[in-house]
Length: 124
Image (tube, rainbow, N blue to C red):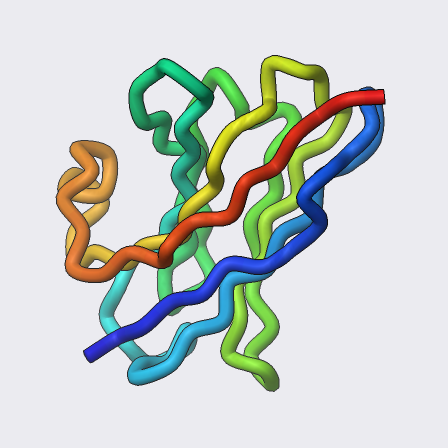
């Protein structure tokens, strides 16, 4: 059973880069046949798929966020990382990492495992 745990700063200032980590256990970011996604949910709004990375290292992004988003992995720590640049208060959300066996399922929020999420607030 794959387990995921997000971590990172709860408060980020506008114009800065948000950086989050997702620690994976029960699976490998380099050998498990999963698409590892980042998703967010702003207060009072629905889920938004931000992007994913596959075991090959290939990355896939939501076009609306692609210019500001970078997803990578630390193979030595079995972790995923999310970086979102030039943040504004509209980036305030709960951020999740999740795993799915198919990219289309990932875009439909059909995941095999989810992390518990981490709140990020963008404010000066």
